[in-house]
Image 1 (tube, one colour):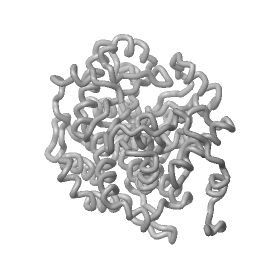
Image 2 (cartoon, one colour):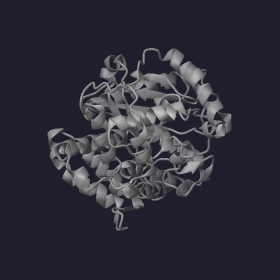
Image 3 (cartoon, one colour):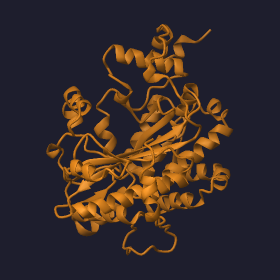
Image 4 (cartoon, helix red, strand yellow):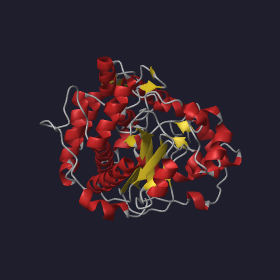
Amino acid sequence: MSDKSSQTILDIILERLPFIGKAEEIAFQSHGVFTLGVEIELQIIDPETLDLTSKSESLLKSGGHIKTLKPEIYQNMVEINTAKCTDVHEIEQDLSASYDALQALGEQQGLSFATTGCHPYARYGDNRVTDSARYKELIDRNQWITRRITIFGMHVHLGMKSGDDFVRFNNFFLHFLPHLLALSASSPFWQGEDTGLASCRPCMFEALPTAGQPYQVRNWHEFEALYHTLKKCDSIRSLKDLWWDMRPSPGFGTLEIRVCDGPATLAEAVAIVAYIHMLAHWFEDNGDWINQVPPPPRWLARENKWRAMRHGLEADLVVNPQGETKPIRKDIEDWLHKTARYRESLDYGKYVQILRQIIAHGNSSQRQRTVFEETKSLQDVVKHNIREFQRGSPVWNGESDDFPAGIIPMPDLHKSCESLCASQDL
């Protein structure tokens, strides 16, 4: 007999819900285990004003050969999607080819790009909505909250074998959302002001009741029941209205991790994806860990996310309900040690080296603040972000564009651009 006093309100509601047959939208369809796919949102920047510019329509019209290029809610942004990949090496090749093709197109049209979580001074009031029934419905439904979402992130899809497996891995990765946010943090400025946060991007989402921390469920049946209830009461219209930090994508058969700010560089993006992939392989071989260390209580998960938002890699994590803490840098490094076996078997050594460089030298938010402290110019911060995107790896304080010792440049993949850009969508 279960102890009702230890159950959450959600537990009790879910127990009382009748079984509702699978809707096609949430029928979980596996397409491979631990396959990978990545979506990255990009800023379209006028190189003269260094502000965002609403040029997505012309980019998409001229960029039909870039099959991975997609529209987004506002015309000052676009999205790059990879194909389904088996490992991070393929993800790196796919993204590099798409970036190369997009930058060539941008040069023709007099445009620049960046992938940080926010533009430092763009005004959301200047946004033009992309002509789409769904986007217009989002604006009408959520009003000002949606109108201010001029933010840019990275979503990572991880292939699962079943809906129940999704739930297991979802509950495991709840422990690592702060780590991923701290490593990717790239949104310290908002509409011309220093927010004091390492990542202000999550603040734009969390006014929505279906955004932020995902609701915890124990199996896929519970998720189905929750989904149908949210839809019945018109809290959501579809799965796309669940703007959680993680959510299922049943049609792709994936766990979609959405917490990351847009990594400023390709090197950081693929390194973070490698971290996710190594953790997934470790959990597959150590599944009983979740019984010893259950998903964090909601207050603890929320506290740790806030600490990562506020302090980034300087945060101290709360590691248990008793309130003990540990530097997030140390915990990331400890998990790199635990997953060393998979670093070797997957040949992810160079990605781990990049992660260790971020831990040692700082994330994008720290680099942007260093530029601003030196120049007192947010335009110089934008120039820095464009420069990092173009070169593909972080620019540390006082560095030239030549790759210094210890920094791993991304490979030149122009020759593979044509074939990879024609790859299928995820």
